[in-house]
Length: 290
Image (tube, rainbow, N blue to C red; front, side, top):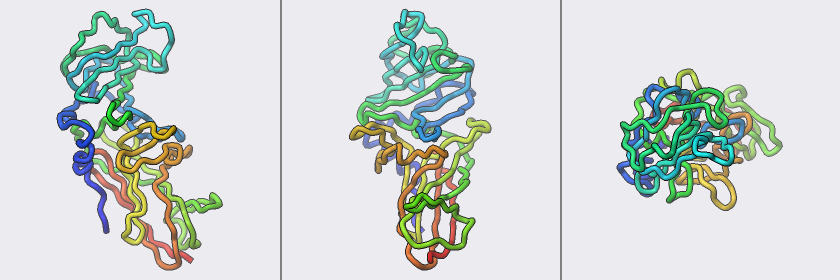
């Protein structure tokens, strides 16, 4: 059986676009709790960064140059959903965006910052309802948002959880694999309901990093939540194999992984889900196609 691409292998691919030194990124908060992560399905919409519930100092994820500070203290004319926010040019083409900050005075922010330097405090500005920090990473080379978890050395030994794998035929009828012993032959779209967990996520169920689908040992579908970028007039998901986000993200919280053709006979379907730290969970389904 073909195995899932390791996260370290992905890093080599990512390095073709991003500089090596980016993998020294740190978390921008200390002991914050992640309630949303990059790629998470929010009722059909992808999350573009990481949301920390936090009430203390915010630090740069890496050294960099402050490009822009938006603050109500400095007479901002229009309210922003991000509230008070700051953009920092990190290495090469990477920009870190830190939002929902407490009040900051742009005149007191240095032009160059270090990892150990507090740049602000998490706050309730913008659309925040409690003290928090929204952290996003934008890459100018790809004109897209990058998954921050791939730039940080994460300590995580907890594998993702696969809740359901669902087949949907051309008429929209859905079949939950594992509940039926047989299905009719035909073309099916495959949706996966899965989430990830780790100590820094608390009890929150967030998005895994990669989904892979095999049918009778053959790779039939793959989805990587590594990049969100606007291409050809639509938001696309994935660096190596981009797909339209409105096709991938379903309003019920599932992810579209691929379309398969099932012919008569015995079928072995395997789903593999991986997180950004390389932990994997697989689920195998065996059924008859009539």
